[in-house]
Image 1 (cartoon, rainbow, N blue to C red):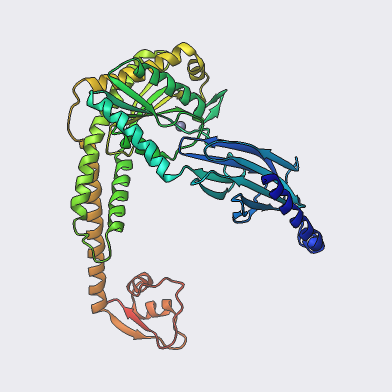
Image 2 (spheres, helix red, strand yellow):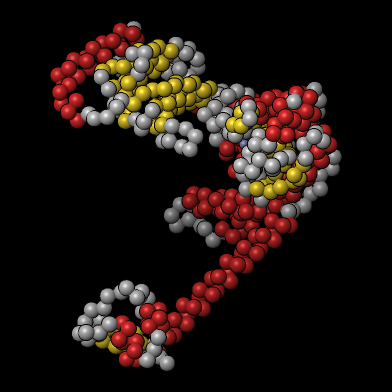
Length: 472
Ligand SMILES: [Zn+2]
């Protein structure tokens, strides 16, 4: 059926093209873009078809055939095999057909199961990637909710038995490979590490480890921590390997939220809250809400620091071949959560050959995984020191004091200016006047005239304009 429809359309199109071919050729100059690769990524919740295009594509909106097949056109484009059918038969995509439907035009047909949402967009060139067309597919909402609830009830059953939930987050994935250097591709490397660490937790009945992704696909940063928040995780660990153009830099780093990153997040949350308030709603509790947010952040940050310290100690002891660069702070988006202590581990530098040798060594990898497990275990089984991160509170206090001081300085300057305006004389511009002539005539510096009148030296005066002259 699909094949028939495809051909029928192609035929109709071919006829049209034949009729208009001369006009078309007349406006067409330059080479056709080519589709150089087609990839398919799939997570439990969504899938992506990614097509690499050799130059910026012009893509038509998606249309629907009578049988429900969707399609769009790529103009000024050529497809080498002429026609290719990909029977994917998975929960997101039944079939994808790419076809040279006319000269300089490729038509892409795809069919999704009932309820799957499809969106098509073009991704522009980046430093590491060319132009791409993406078909983004999302699982039906009802199915998503059902699946998430099933996960949640399983986790809640474990929690009732006092099992601690640890969320491990292998960074990057799918279209985002992370750093790629000396034979290490970050997204794959951290996936392996995630599975190794999970294996340690799985052998320990006191813990349940959950991976944010278990395949090669991308998840937005915010979603990674939302997965952990949804499960009410006790700890969140994001896994990465590092890169630096200075090849001598090496070693392990464990990060937790920085004051700067947290204050950005606090401001975002306050702004979000204010945007939710209807017109005429109450917004004068902003400072109270902000203080509450800051306190919750400071409490979690205090725990994150302890988690980072335990992980760092255990990692440094487990892999002595890798120097430890210690516990650090950074405003990584994935660490912004206020629901659970969160850290980010960088297992060495792919840009350093000594680190690479260790990273590739199976025995060392196993010990690194064990180090993370032991650090998190240490943190979750031993008493956690409750309290607030004082450096964050200091940071907030300083930032607020600076803001207040700046506002006060601005206000004083404005008052002073208003006062000088009141005392100023008035001069009416005559023919032949210039600003500098007026300044000389009144024996006041030009800069003061410009400042008082809120004008620049490039300002053009006209006869009859009134110029304020500063009092001496
Ligand atoms: Zn990374």
